[in-house]
Length: 621
Image (tube, rainbow, N blue to C red):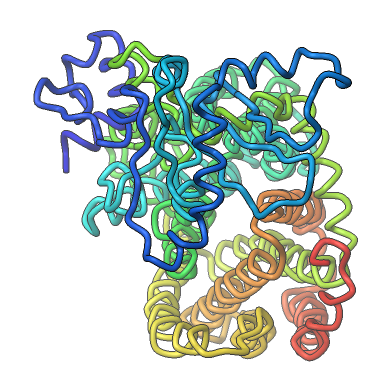
């Protein structure tokens, strides 16, 4: 597995190209490589024919005679295209040649039985010029062999991401989760810097908190521009991931050495923007590898990496680094310390993933194979379907505009609008609620900065338990239901109704037990109950909106969801501290719990009436 992983990484691809395949070669670059039979046949001007039964042969005999008769004089028929229409026989069959794609077809001016298209090469033209018949397969066989120069995956092809070994798939899933973690941690890891930034630059808490808000806003805006790049087969997903991660790492330097507050804000926004592909399309990479059936579990693994970022940020800042005197370094090394840690994490991720993260987009893998086959054979007619489609395809600007247009139109769909609103609400409450932790643990319980990071570990414990339950639910309940006829996408939301109750329970327990006379473990347990709610609702809703509409719309739907929730959530941290200081933890948490309780029956209504809403959608029709 290790040589393949390194070979398929972005650096492995570069080394392979610079050494002309001598370093970490692919199978088609080794001396013992044998070109597949259909490619050899294409080079020899032949078509590989599958046997067909007698009934098909009898039905095709008339058509075959007609085609062979036409093929015996290909040049004459081709020249007939240039004759004036008055000189042509209106009932004669015409052979339409397409030498660029090695394709030919018979056209009739009068009604006739369907005629198969025949693959033909320059060699066939020479044979026909010598009055030799060209063997033509049956109609069914000809459809299978529309283009022998088409580069596709072979059966059980080991280079196809879905055919990777379970061990390789698990390793790649871990890498993608780590990639997402290394970017997502950039939001919460900034929070401990806020008091130091206020003192160092003489700004208010709202201005200092803008560094968090702009980061969250940017990774919602970024996918609208960068996600379309990852759908272009020429680029693929991995180069965009790695390039974005590289700039994410570089942008930490101006923040650490910032001479003023404006520098911090500008580069915090840019950091979120360039890091956004990991957050927006990490789930798509998981589906590339595991396929739609196993998508819920695969995206669950990715979500663990996403959730762990904001949760572990404060823990890493407060706990990991100790100075020589044994004090917590975040307290002694100044406001820039968390950004140093973010720089180290993202730098390590960049180096590791540059050597280890393979490309997962199938069309990109095939294009690279086609390039090698063209180099090997010296024949430029070997093409992938993506390359053929790209001849008259969209430019990047067109793709970008269409992405914006589709995302905005889809966001107005009632089902998607509610789903986006619900996720945005619980996401915003999550960031707002984080402002209550310093108030409770630092002010009420008197925890130091180092100790106050420990309660966040409750999210990790509850998250692991929740994920184990979710895997069990998908494997033993959801998948068997999907195999039965009549399965509706709304069934994916049923677990969300139960999960939605965890959030108000968590908020009420945290808010009203957070008193000095109550042991700190009680509100901490309450806090831990929030994660099952947010994790399961995210999973249910994201899988619902992804599977309810045609696959071609999934990227636009998810990009719109990302923009919607990030834009909404980016505002809440700006007033979070004041909100809880004015209302108190109990009342403030109760207001948030009440809003979340209202959303639960609305989710049930979506389950009940979702099929009708989708039936009226122009996108599904």
